[in-house]
Image (tube, rainbow, N blue to C red; front, top):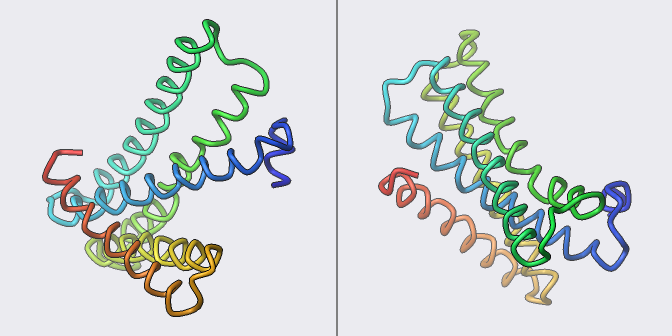
Length: 172
């Protein structure tokens, strides 16, 4: 929440901004899982894989910022500036940071520390773990208890994994 205050968001917007930011993080995580799974089925080398991961992340972020700004202009009849713009950028920033893990793993493959296939597999698994953890935290915060939280985590991880091939099949 301190980050929201630093972003210049009013206190009443903090929970909403955090929820929106987490939503973007989850979407970005699922998208990156799909990207690395798709790359593992391609002939891309480390350079091509890194370019794909980074451009996907940048394109997602730019599309989100453009869509947010267009929606704001349409609804409010003016561009978002100041606090509104800072909130948009704060909420959408996970779309950029989601590329860090896969990019690091691909860089390790480029340096010869591991194969690209292994790097991409690790990147996919590293993406699945937070989905599980967010599901657990969500379950606990709703009072589901330990078993319910673990079940929620498993369901969220399975959904994230299941969405990846669907996104790849659809060309996303």
